[in-house]
Length: 332
Image 1: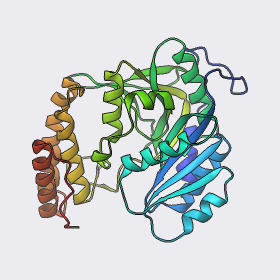
Image 2: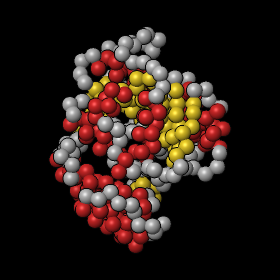
Image 3: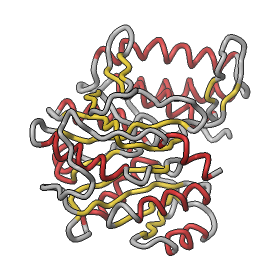
């Protein structure tokens, strides 16, 4: 599993050229040590070991922030890779809180100026960090940059995912294709984001009240509202896995990503919570409302367990409309 997870996205190689990036061996001003913050919850240990092996060769520090996984296997994985340490949380506090804990840990490490955020389903290419570093350094000399992220490919797909600029009624999808460049975008997924600690001090950390879904989207909206830009780095490559299992339904040729009822609660609650925030782009809200309705109908009518799906989604909608970051119903 681990080898197929990592190999496909890295077959193409290019170097960031529109920003005038240097080679990986050249020094980069303004960027000190990097601490990778990798969040886990019941991870696939083979994929985790592959990620840690790649990271330990690219960054000075790796902190694995674990959301209460059972057993002690994670400690052995961390001990096997130089520069890696384990921060075990006493309970599952969610993705956002775990990221914040890792960021706080990075601030205590001498010389660390940037964090690289990752989740347990991601494996960086061997030169991903150097590509991100050079892209960020060059861009930051011209514009205020909140974060840069890699070009990633879901291991179940045959093509890279695009970077996105939010438009109405449809987003503009920007593909790296054969171009070697950076791409300004409106949001980046959490995994693979390289962020200066100074930006986090200015913008703030992740919103722990969201727990898991739309954590990256909310932070990107907040950062861009504060005057920063976000950029994708085409030369940086990441193998990633988005979402849970896929299920084929009539009319959907590629199948749909299926989530547990509790996850559907967070998806509904958090998107409505974002609708209420002044810094959320109106064009994103306008195009997301139809998605909300479509997801509600799909999981209530076609995807089992339909009754539990509907109950959790309605509970999430009620909480979001009321502006409350309440917990999901205890039904699955």
